[in-house]
Length: 89
Image (cartoon, rainbow, N blue to C red; front, side):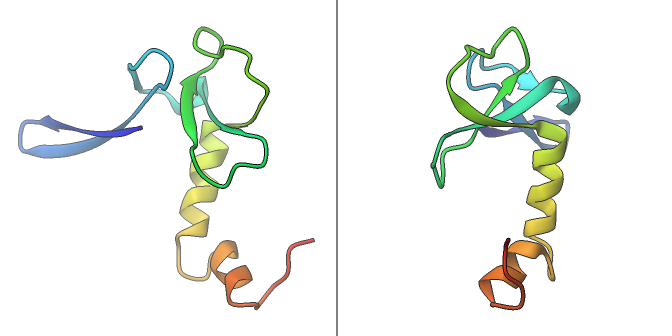
């Protein structure tokens, strides 16, 4: 889940771990996780201590966030696929 926390006058977005509820403050220590075949419902969890071993797809949070940025940027792969400009293998 994404939560906004106010730090002085700043509205700061944080990812919260779906297992423990604490903020993920180091993306290299976390995963994005979603059920096999799902098209929505991505959870973010701390590696190790909060990974309950569910049979899910996972991706390193660093990589997942870079894909998210790429897919929401003009000219990103997802937008180009949707427009029929490129095909996925």
